[in-house]
Length: 354
Image (cartoon, rainbow, N blue to C red; front, top):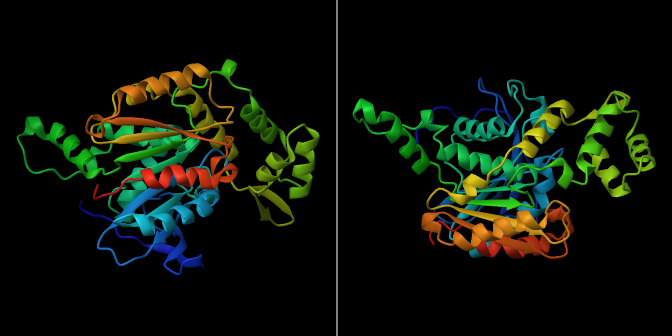
């Protein structure tokens, strides 16, 4: 693929080495005319001739850093089992993390634009297209939208097809684009594929968002926030996690995310369905759903419908859908049972030479 823009970084630095000296995390911010998402990398640097790429997408009100530990473990595991070296790109979605400070990520703040942000990041960075996309919760639906947008040819203007008759140009452009788009595997982690009806939700997320919108700005302190949310009936663990999304501003604390934009993204998450994509996935792709055993996001009808599709879609050449049950875990799969999640993902991870 033609690389029209070279990476130019306002800052690029090594954050830290982890257990193996061949694995590291790097944090990047972008300084380009095309403003793109902030991200950091976890990379396994071996002596293999090829390198593959996976995008890691966090959930609502989170950031890429939430997935550092799991990404390190996955990269370490793949450094032994995979025929390719791997680069894990931990993305901060629009309105989240360091991407909340990026100008030019304009409304509407929905799944379609969130997926387009990923395509813009890949193109502007001059990377080859990712073989794998992993998304948790909100990020899971962004991953599904990413695949759907490709299947529709939404990013086709970037393809450079061979010269054809004018009548065939659009069709060829779409075909060439999807051949360049190498995301052959999605991992959708505890994210329901259909619309999320209010009557089928316990309302916890909505309550959290409304509470955050009602708080003073700036926040007096992290301790004040945690204590206040506990007084309102939220668990201390949830309250402390919310508090981890504050950042210092003078003598007070402000949110590390754009709350109004995040609310719009959540509304898009609730209103968007990908059942049609699962019923007719692109050929030569695989969509894996990890369902957490103790998650409150699923109902019996949704689970049965997904399992029925998975039973009918077992051939990768025709587009495969698979389900995996993560035992002893609630919705926060990467912290509730990271080893169990790794044991599911690693042996089933895409291999470029399978």
